[in-house]
Length: 264
Image 1 (cartoon, rainbow, N blue to C red):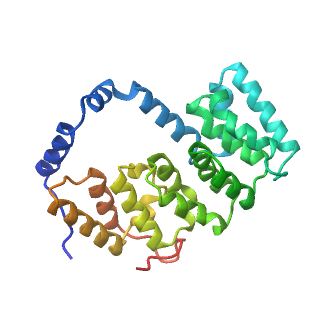
Image 2: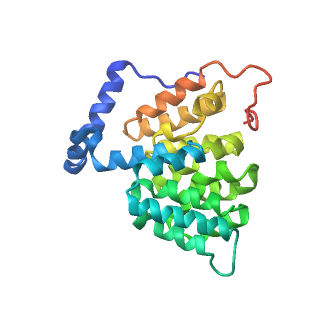
């Protein structure tokens, strides 16, 4: 089929229309550049949560936390390691997860929580309890911890639950490395579309180039989505073109590991 395309001029027009539609508050945030608080928090989260190794996370926090926060984290990790697993209605380390935002600050709380979950040797049962009983911040930390703590697809229900929400920070965490490894092709395609629909940057989708390469079914879904938005008089997100371009790239060579194939 012929997939939707736009000339550079058309893409520029779409971008300009989106900027014109920004509220004054959004325009002010854009004008502030990468130093604004929202961008700083986003960069900090990317640096410390989704893809870094546990060793890198610890080093990052050791470097950036102030002395009281470092002392608190060291104590929390020692406590979790000394009393791992689930204990009664709530474990001590679960209380530390709740404190992490206040103790370490929002920019570093995700990483601190991931380290606490690791120290507590949280398995699928513990992660599931934290996810469904915790706050949105704690749920996001669980999603970031999955690739470090769960080797198989047993925690996919947590990913699937997060993908049903419209919380963009939760969605961004849900499409990380664990989803890239274990989501079926059908579910993964819908996750990519959910990102486009809600405005989650496709940069958050782990392993996107490999999984999208040569995926004709994803290209078809993107085409349908573009047609619906165009018919409704709405602009197309630039990320849609990026993903569409990836679907036309060379697919992995035969024998290359590709979770769940490219089934429709």
